[in-house]
Image (cartoon, rainbow, N blue to C red; front, side, top):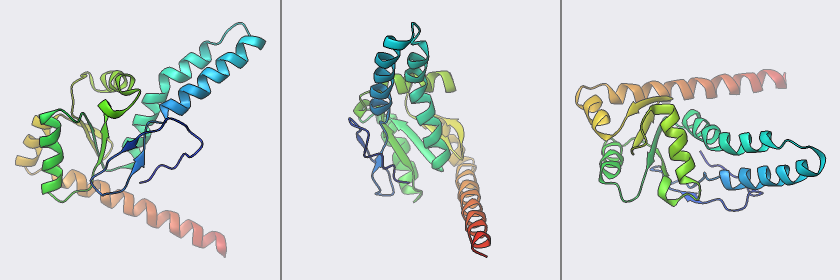
Length: 176
């Protein structure tokens, strides 16, 4: 899925297995908006904590959106050999996946902090399949060897296809 947010400055390109480019680091835009809101609020209100809360939740919201929009998401770092192994596994299985290279993001540390809150670990890769955290590279390889990884991926593709068909059906019904 492509993320087009042309109004946001400071976004960075994120690679995905499918060859589609995605725009992920919307935290830069959210941070700018939060800062602008804080400045504007400072002239009118004495409390700008809501702006700071928005800035803190931006990575978490973006992570959750990325996970819900993609069947397989790998939060990775370009220099990590375990990340390379995990990406190779999905590549060899001919499965499309979304890669978020945290070391290429301006706010990568905040993303890693949010992943820690979600998964209990800061290490990479952090791999999500069908909206569920399945672990790192070792956990993913174990699921693959047990024959459980591909069914999880297929389950997601079926769910996404069913959602797409239901949406098309609703659109057709609206036309009549």
